[in-house]
Length: 187
Image 1 (cartoon, one colour):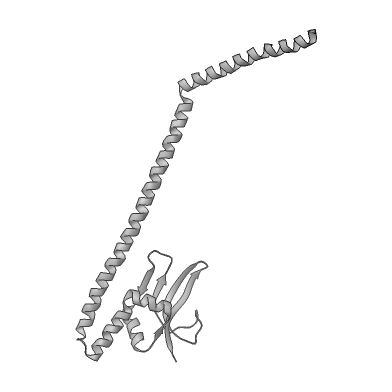
Image 2 (image 1 turned 30 degrees about the vertical axis):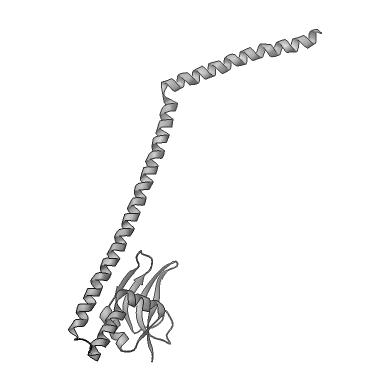
C-alpha cells in the first residue's frame, strides 16, 4: 500500500477549504484517509496553513509521497527542510540536537518574512482606505458648496433678476411680432 500526503477538499462551492491528509493512493480524493496532519485555507491572504510538522516528517520518513501542491505547502512550512535535517543527523553529518536548533532558526526567519508581508498588506489597505476617504471628502465638499451657492440669498436675487430680464425681453418681442403681422394685412 503506497501512502500519499494530499489535499482533501472541504468547504462550499467557490469557497474551498482543504485538509492535508495521509491517505492510500488508491482511495478517492475526498474519500477515506489514514490521518489528518493539517489544514490549508487558500481564501485568506496570505493563505492560512496549520500543520503538524512532526507528524508530517514522520510520514515522510515512513515513505509517504506528497503531491505537488502538498509538497509546495510542506516546503513553505519547513517540513521538507526538517526531513532533510533529520536524514543528515541519521547519517552522522551533525548531532541530533542540532536539528531542532537549525529548524527553529529557519522558522524564526520564515515567520519574520510572513509578518512583514502581513504588515505590508495591512499598510496598503490602510493607505487605500485613506485615499478613498479623502476623495469622498472632496466630493462631499464640492456638493456642499454647490448646495450653498444654490441656496444663498445672493443666488436667489441673481436668479430673480435673470427671470425678470427674460420676462422683459419676451414682452418687447411680443409687440414687434404683432406689428409685423399687421403690416402685411394693410397692404
